[in-house]
Image (tube, rainbow, N blue to C red; front, side, top):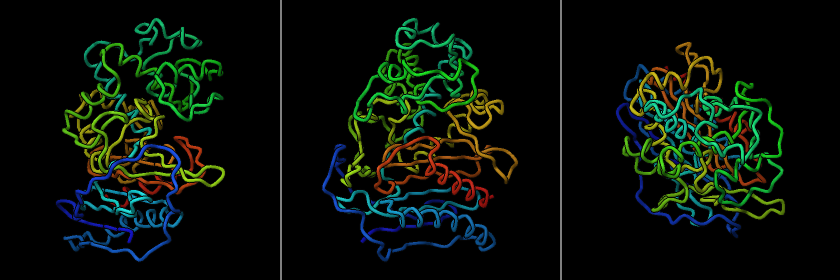
Length: 397
């Protein structure tokens, strides 16, 4: 039986979290069966405690339930959502962890968070800025003299332009070089685009490129003397005592991993959990849980990880829809913005958004339908996820 668990509470989650452990499988082909057909779900729920807010509550819940149902109907093996607002908290965990084990998914299961990793890298860079070790408008070449031996930029490339995807640097994800397997060093990821044309230099129009964060990781590692996973752990994980947020490849590895799948052109299933490609990656490497994503972005927004001045710099209006490691989405409730990020990698999608005042936030994770799966930060699946999230938040005022 596939599990469907929903809960609503004005003071805490109404979802029972299982403690069952799951050994995460290595990436590769598997003979696991196709996703099971739709089955009658088991539902556990509790109504909103405040009758006056029940209609408003039902409105945002309906949006998220519809999104989850549509994803599952298309073949997604799991959908996990948690929304927090002044109206209360609502969560949903639907589907299974793994096609092989058929274990029911839980709210606290770990998942690949893809590009949300870049927010954590940006926080680590901003910590260097706060300590006076770098300036945002300094060129990266000032700190990495060997940078131009890896790639030939058209001129000085500022740290600010890297974090905001305005450096003009090509994206290694679309490199003509075969980069499916990995793992790769940051230098290798940058070198993959060495023969590709730039769209300009610092100050170029926004163009999303994971290579910007490979370059940023080189900077962080040079100044900290540690690999990027360790720095993210020290700067982002330890201050919040997060228990299930880690870099792919670190030990101990995840114990309750959500498995996402793709399908080869010949129809064979591939399990993408812990794919070597993500090991140590500054743009796709982190693993987390839906509740810890909400904890993380709440802490970032209120100035727990950085000074509020640094946070404002990360999402200053001059950056339009993408700031320094943060995505902006319009908030109809406050005529302000939501801040967060979307993460899309093969077999997975994740999202976290929070309102400017911190009163409303949502995090989501999907083990997507197994299909031959080109990915991209702005592919239609991520845009669809963001639309559902923003619609729900706008109804949770």
